Length: 195
Image: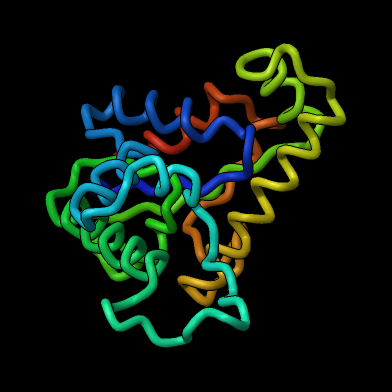
């Protein structure tokens, strides 16, 4: 039985729903964006500021800013270090489903783990987002948002893990939720986790 399941995802591909359902079926803890709030508190950083910076690579320092931080690492580095520590503690406890946060890379050396990437066809993701979360947005606005979020995730992944977001070599399993459907993705992940 796999004790740790990580789900990386394209925006709108349904990984949150898949993760919640997998966690419920396996009676595992479900961990997602709430981890950012825990991380912010443990790093003594303002929660609103963290939520604004969620899954973004650090910005390059401006010319007038010092490259040296006399109070320690830059905010982005402290945030990622604190988040990494929390993810590792959750992983050590096991029996968890973690969505996002580069958990697949952070927990890559943990035994009994299953690392999954959820992707989907662009129009399917846009339809799903419009129906569930963004009913007042146009398809063009939704697709623009999807591209922006996925671009941030690619940069964040590359910067902190030196891996490529969505590259199959970083995962045990890649699932296309638009062709398989959410139910089948849940079933596949649970069956593989049960081994």
